[in-house]
Image (cartoon, rainbow, N blue to C red):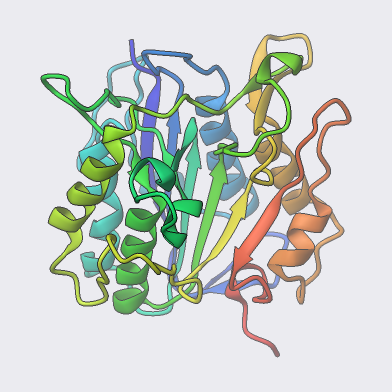
Length: 321
């Protein structure tokens, strides 16, 4: 069966967090983990989701009673939670911008653990066009299939994700944290088979998918107030709406590895991030940059986490006292 999960957490209003003097108005999270890809399935993404869930509930004090998710083993389905197919992921993220319970300034975490991919725009723009030197980085959904098939399902491109984040920020404020335990690896300098671990990178769909991907984004998001055309040759992302923590540099692979002797696999980045969040090294005035610096990777991996966007913000956007 599928091993997949999309979950929501809401922190109660104005409650002090256990073991910390951090104070939140509300805290929301969407966690997406995908193991069951048709090609190159993964092993640790749902474990990552469970680890994130444990951190949120046990370390940040998020109440269990406000967790909504699918339990694929017990087939327990609860309201408003679906499998991570392309349409559902986009709908779930867009719903953050319209959810009346989420107030402006609330903290929002969006977490993705799964395959990423990369598309060279030289396959789309004509030779000599400056835009042909760029690439589109994409998140791979569980139902991805190649263009030209009877039921083609495209990856979710970075332009599409960025427009969605801008819309969430417009409605709910820019306290958004995006965590990506995947890789795009368009310029990777080594063969993934050289790694003793499993890499979270999927082969891109055929080049014809680029046009379809952009058209799908334009059709779905074109009426949003902050939309600017994904077809623009000088397209630039809105990086003030959020901070993004990514598993590795663009020339590296994000890996997952077994932990201990129990055959439990985890994302190397996710485990390093959670250990850093639980450590005593982060203080009240720590920033997202401090968090990335404190995230120590396994010695047998060649990946270095990166940060972009509103990186100088304090962790969880806590106000300066």
